[in-house]
Length: 407
Image 1 (tube, rainbow, N blue to C red):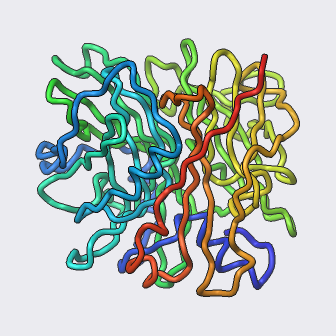
Image 2: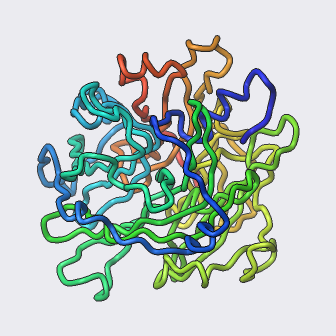
């Protein structure tokens, strides 16, 4: 994982890979497993059909807007048995105006075993949040046959097609990192990217339809983490990837871009990669669109907002101290100089056991703010897991608003 110094290694590795672990052994993955798992598509368990929303929320008001302040208050009010805290919170707007939220490691009340699960899903209407639960009561995106954790990275809503079935109102893609968890608290390893396909029916409940591998399994620490951000535009889905370069004292990540036809978004065989001048079908020819020296976090946001492409991330990596914006006229750049837009101290300078960490800022352009500014969230956590259990509000995202650049 990230190597900066012996002092910062445990905390930086923690943030890069999600901050929390489950009490589960690391899976043993052999070369045969890798071959058999290559680009596999996995059907959901029968339990997926039991998905429901708890508690119920009213239908959204099309004219309603929100503010960072009201969402922060809504976060403090959440006190659900199976959702006490979580990081990430990538979003997309459904056809009816509700918002789907995909969360990473999720803390639950102390009588649950395990108290932490790999991920969770919510639907919000205004400032009301419903959790998507199933009868099994575990993570919403279950581990596959390889036993790897699935952490959401980006969420995109698409129009359904006839192939998705009758009565489907929304197709939602959730891009996920496949993570191997180790025996120690900060031991995590990125092994590839998958995408979960959710279908929303007439009852308004998203249900898992399938999970598809977009990249083959790999233990290479310097591989490109495709799906770290995703954005549809025209006939294409643009998939962004970040890569740790292992250069001494360089904590930012290179940023890459690829694309797949919007009509076939889960088919890795038709993926094309930007080589600096054009699109190629050879992944080894992909060239970075941002360098690592002033690079991004592992997971970030890239959105087309009113015809302008906007990156929101931390310049210099996950535990940098500023949320930063880059802009461009096209999905491949060239990108503007990075502009710090919001102070967000990483928290790694405090003594061990007293670190309040902030990481993985994300933008939410589909959520309309009263001010008209861009809604941004940042994940928060502590390096004292017992403190997180006792005070779960320390592990809930914090919202802010930042102005968009004028044309």
